[in-house]
Image (cartoon, rainbow, N blue to C red; front, top):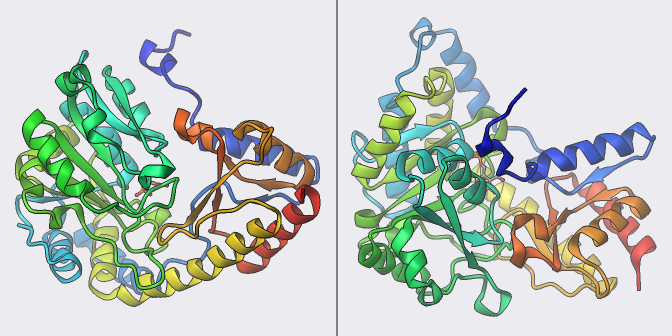
Length: 387
Ligand SMILES: Cc1ncc(COP(=O)(O)O)c(C=O)c1O
């Protein structure tokens, strides 16, 4: 069997590897606690399930959905953006639903990249920012995210050659995996960069609804001029415990949204309309859910940061996301440390190097396990790894 060259360009998907390791250990009878994957452990809000149940009984939702999305969902997204971010969106031309942010991040590469062109991607970053361009037959130019710059890329440092071939730039704040919030001036600089270099700025807003200590995450589209050069991908997965529902949307620049839609009509047949109506209900009525979830993650964040400090791993408490990004102890690589943690304590954490070369030297803890399991995981880390 001959697989495609484009598939050969990819490293195995990080979480597929993690799932395999977890299954191995469990097979050996180890009570594994996985802090590897960011997948909310608490149920999807009742209002989503209630609306899904109601809408699923309506035969009007049973046929092929339109890829443009039901007006109810697009209008709910427009209301949400207005209420939450003060951003006005045209529900007819500036919004298209996506089957999760992952699908959207991937497909936007197919819509905008050709061989020889590239996407600028954060390093470390969500793996699809680098695998997507490669699968599209194009290239990736990495933008280092360094702790000393608040995990913001230095846009001035992007080489003339990289500017020349770039058509897309992926940004993501609040950020996975670093937990950083957007540094002052970055979105403004990105708008200018997009304008001068004719690069579409794609802001992945998957974590804007999970914030702590009064921090309120902005939309990229709040930035003056952003809609001229960019789009935002908003996902309901993390903020509203809806990872299994595959609900997201691309919003912003009408030409870019139309290009994505044109591509998508050739690839999939849209989101089950009952799910679209459920997502609309959450966007209209789910503000409390996101706040309650943030309070839960903030408590867990404090638990993890405190336990890490006790075992000699200092980390600044993140102001958003469901992750803690921590330096590996001296003498280890990210991978060797994560192997050791799994071997000695049955706890899975993600090696920073899997998110890009500049993730090396870090590991990521996900806060999406119940408090008791997280406490147990940190106790195991403490007893087996205290230095
Ligand atoms: C930055 C980022 N973007 C996108 C996704 C995928 O989100 P979705 O469930 O909407 O596909 C994730 C999931 O971890 C993520 O961290």
